[in-house]
Image (cartoon, rainbow, N blue to C red):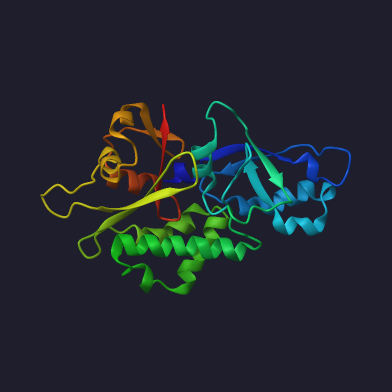
Length: 262
C-alpha cells in the first residue's frame, strides 16, 4: 500500500491566455502530484505561481480543465489521469481557469473544508458497504480527524494506524461487500455491490471480469478489446476483486477502476 501512496503524476499547469491580466504569459507550473490526493490540496501552490497574472478576486472560482473537459475536483488525481490522460504523453498538461465556472458540470469548492467533508463522506459510505457501518460509526472524532490530517500531510504510517481498523476482515468484523466504482472516458461511474465469499459457495462477482459481466458496463463483444486500469496499472481480467481491493483501494476506501479501449 505504501507504494500506491507514493505514486505520482507529473503535471504541467498553464493559465488560459484569455483570462490573464497582463500581456506577458506566465511560465508553466510543474508538480509531481500524488495520485491519491485531490487537486484542491495543491490550489495554494497554484495560486502562488499564477497570482500576479490573474485578478486576485477571481481565484475563488479557480477550476481545472484538460482538452476542454472540466476536471471534477472530488476525484483523486490518479483516477482523473487514468480516465482522461494519454499515458504516452508526459507531463499531463492541465489548464487553470478563473472565469466561466461550469456550474452545471462541476461542484463548487471554495474551501478545503468541503474537500474534507467529501473525503469523510466517502469513508463513511465505504464503511457501510464493508461492515454495515459497525466499525466507522464507533470510531472517535479524533481518529477521523487523524485520517484526514495524515492524508493531507502525506503521513502514511499515521494514516494506516487508523485505516487498518476500516480494512478489518476478521470473523468478528468480516468484509461483507466491496465498495467499487467503474468509470469510462468521462466522470460518470457505476457503483455495484460486490459481495465477498463467506462460505464454500462461490459468490459473484469475484473477479474484475465477473464485475464487468454483471454490470453490463462493456458490451460482450468488446471485452477482449478492453483494459482495466487502477492506479495507472493494467489489471488482468481474472484478478480477484478482494485482492485488488485490499492492495489497490484509494485512501477514501473505494476501489476505483477505469475501463478503456486497448
